[in-house]
View 1 (cartoon, one colour):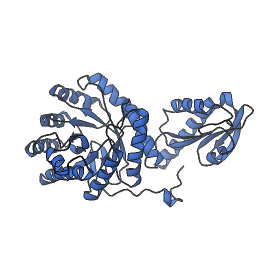
View 2: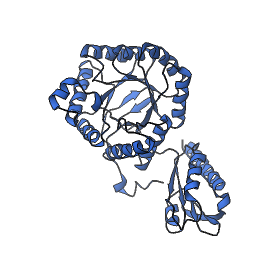
View 3: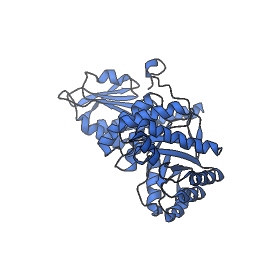
View 4: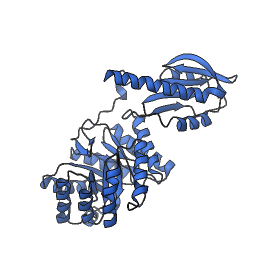
Length: 373
């Protein structure tokens, strides 16, 4: 349930960027902010990599990136692209020929790192391959691999050096009349990344790929990414995101969507609003929410669900959600539908009943959407 139409302080005004295509996914302009992840299987293991791509796609990933470190991986990429339901970005480092091979293999986008792809002549060859095969490019600037001359000029990785690196490589692409590109300026330091992204956002209208690189494990990396990406997205910066976690790629997709959902920028699946629980709880809130998150993973329809342990905030939260349950004591609680108290339900039947109500509401929403179309 969105309140943006009556609460102007909820609105985020996105930076105006031009739009490019990554396969069939628009990036930039007024397109939805896309969510990406990256496989961690050996690219030469086609079956394992395809399975990971599909798992990410089922979790909602719009785009998946795959590392192409050697010629064998380039050959495998062709089979992976053929089996993938989402556009594939080829991650290229050090060997410019891998970029050419990836474009020939059907990659939708090439991610090249200006600090290690080689001299301008080699970059031009990659540009030609991208143009010949209708492939976009992401300029991937990283604080950990800046060009030597920029480190000598600035003394250390800093926002100015990262922006200069990005603009230098934008110039190369534009001088070669290539404009299907996006850019990222990643760092593991939240402050450095945020400042660099603000600088590049002011300096170009290119679509921006957001990320806090090497953010850490599932918990620490999620927090760091939520702070860094959340603040930039709140400022209207960002057209596509990847949350970099030392975790299953599916978790990256989930966290990415949760960040976007919390800002009202993407709506997918059930948004569960739940209390942290306390001595007033009329049922085991923590266990209930954990179970419901797993039971409702299959629901892709955007909708809201409140699970509150007692009547202090429960009724108020339920007024703003599609489905709600508020603990009332004596082994039962109140079920709310469309913001209104509907009926009581015993705690022991509550989880199955909520799943049924959410599924029913999702079906109603989808039916109404189909009728409108």
